[in-house]
Amino acid sequence: MAERFIQWRSAKLEELDAISVYQLFRLRQSVFILEQACMYPDIDTLDENAIHLIGTDSEKDLVAYLRILAPGAYFDEPSIGRVVVATAWRGTGIGGLLVEEGLRVVRQHFGDIAVRISAQSHLQALYEDAGFEAVGEVYLEDDIPHKQMLLYSSQAD
Image (cartoon, rainbow, N blue to C red; front, side, top):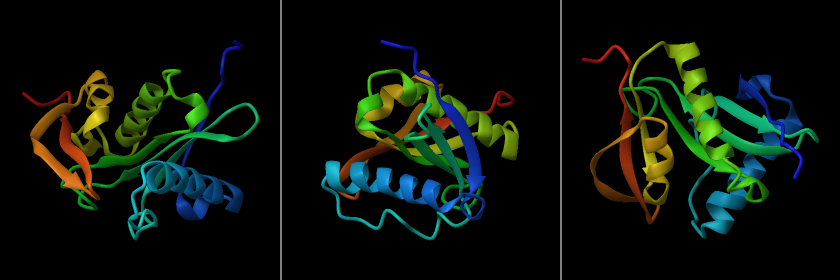
């Protein structure tokens, strides 16, 4: 199999072209609503001010995505969410690369501070590999088990 190339781009919603916006909402809908059979308002008011991280392949197809929320938008800390990889790209290691790139963008915008996420429980190992630690108990979010996880800043004692 030929080596797969990913181009990363981060931008606010108003900075994205219409095709990119269509692709990111389409990918999120296909995974979070259809594949996971979860009826919830995926497109929400947080999208407007989020930083959207888009990973495209050599054909310019969206294959990986996440959004970054500023401190205070959802948690006291900045957070990443809506982490999604296209079906054909799962198992290639792109999920870890996506989280790594997301954290790089978080640091670029907000500095070296702690990052908190609400992770689907079955993906806990992915986030632990990136340095996150589980905090608190498992809870249901849209009928899917989740766990808060925290990545401490390198400045923490």
